[in-house]
Image 1 (spheres, rainbow, N blue to C red):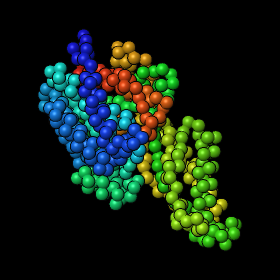
Image 2: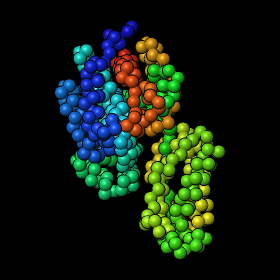
Image 3: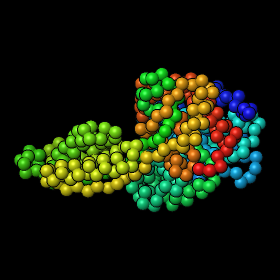
Length: 421
């Protein structure tokens, strides 16, 4: 029997109006958005979201990790929560679609069900997770909610502890409070997320929908090469303990190593900071930010060990020392096969051309994959561009994704709620 809600679709006009309004918060002259987590722009977006939730007549809450939620209550008390989530924060000088699309679509799903006069059998939540992008700590909010953060994780934020504490204070949060945001997994029935692909595959192949099979694992570390400052004009090259030489040689040879031995993985040197950073002084210290990604835990570990060995080799060749600090470790996650099947059925019912595909980017969904049935929907990113002001998805694709999120939520949590994980 087809559920009556299966005939419903989101309100496209309201969806677009909300998207346009949100895009103005932190807007840049280039047409993108600069809304890093815990910034003034992030706070403004959060205030805007709260107003939209309360205006819609939905229940608003914000936990001790700063995760904001709109809740549509079940017709009975004590029922589990089915989460639809994403994030409002962006990378510096980012785009309008990354994260924001998923939040606004989730809000539309709740409003559509509410306006249909239907009291669901589970509590539906549309959640804005704190710092998905990792301005300070990647997937901070979703990891806090699912118990995947430790006190030690909060001691090494990417911009330093002072900037982190300042940002938390801006939002009325504390490091101690973040750890108390954990929820009992038994209270979470499932998780769905809509997101732009952030790559070219869907657009290049003419697909309307991507159904995510798994999310790549991420390993981030800081490599600190320590040499000796000397006069750059009077110190012979062979007598230098040049930290810049060691770091630069590592970056170049790491590229060659990954390309040759780890074609299934990717790596990135996101930053190199030279000290004292002066034209005529041999670098005494260079700190390098290294990120590794792989869909397999074993390969991620092997890649990490291989590149650390290479880093020590280059440090020795340049007569320098090296220290390594692990910044973040996020394990690969696999999306629930039953959820993937349900998404395929809904895409077929909506006459959408889809493909099964992995995600090369991290998402909040991977925090939930180990505790509840989880899934992700991708829509095409034109030219594959993301984390840029040129990020763009056609609006019809956005609407298609939001309607698929609605139908999947109905199928998974309304018609046949999960009884196990």
